[in-house]
Each structure stands twice: as C-alpha cells, then as structure tokens.
Amino acid sequence: MRFNDGGQIHHCELKPVIESLLQIVSFVANDTENAPINKLVELYSKVFSQSLKEITGKDLYDDLNALASLRNLFAHGRDLFIEFDDPFANKATLDKNPLQKPAQRLYQAGIIKDFKITGRNYHEFQALFYSDDILLYFYRSVQKIENILIESIAFIPEKSMIYMPSLVDLEA
Figure 1 (cartoon, rainbow, N blue to C red):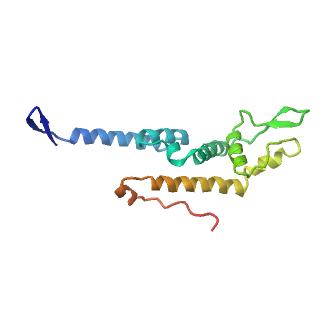
Figure 2: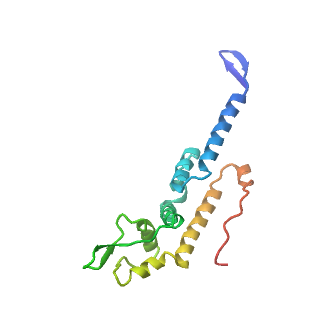
Figure 3: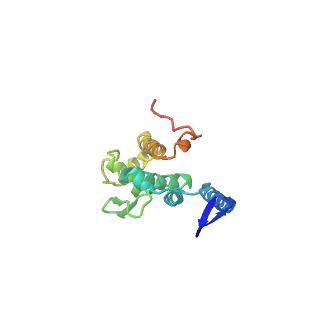
C-alpha cells in the first residue's frame, strides 16, 4: 500500500492487517460453531452494521426468540410444565415459565386461542406444542428470516457464493 506521510511516500506491507483480520474471522467462526441463538444474535450485531432485529423486524425477531425458548426445552429433554396459582381456583399461569414466550407468539398468531388453562384442559394446551401447526408456524418464520438475511447481503460476490440450500417447503 502506498502511504503519503508529509510528502514522503512509504510502501507498506498489508500482511499485518490481513493477518489481524483473519484472526478476527477465525475467532468469530470458532465462537459461532456451537453457540446458542442468543450468542449468534449478539455476534450478528457485532459483525454487521444492522442488528438482526432491525433486518428481520420485531415480529420475526420475537418468533426467533420464542423458538429458541421452545428449542431449549426440547433439546434438553425438559418437561413442559404448567403451574397452577391456586389448586382450588383451578387456574394456571405461565409467569416465569419457558413456555411463556412461545405461547405469547402463538397466541398473537391465532394458533393458541386463549390462556384459560385449567386442570381439565392443561393437557390439551401442552399437546399444542407438539402439533404440526406450531412446528409449521415457527418453520415458516425461520424460512422468512433466511430469505430476509439472504436478501440483505449487500456484497454481490458473497450473495453468489451461498453454499447451503434454502430450507425446503414442508407443505409442498
């Protein structure tokens, strides 16, 4: 690289800059290898000029967070539980429950009709989280996020070098 310093031209090696950038890329690659979604979202904001929430919009971003909560329950083999405020009142709550975020998103999407969980219907409420409707709702959200991220690529050579196939349409 040519560098002008007070009228004196210097020829500088770019090797130290390139090595530093490669170290940063290697660090980010290693950090993302087994990272949970929260860490990936955080790293995304550090690597790119916009946050993931800015790119995807609030609704899809909230779907992603809800899916992460649900994924953690399933991946770690945890039971889906519902606590009752008062066993005699027969009314359950999702406060501080890992199902709360997914349930709120699914309620907003119209898949969960209400939060009137009782001793007589709680098993139906729990069973919803294993249903095709919920799987497809979150899968479609991830497909939309994938498409938005691909479209947000501003560097044309990068866009032409996508090596992973897109998520398939499960309903075809």
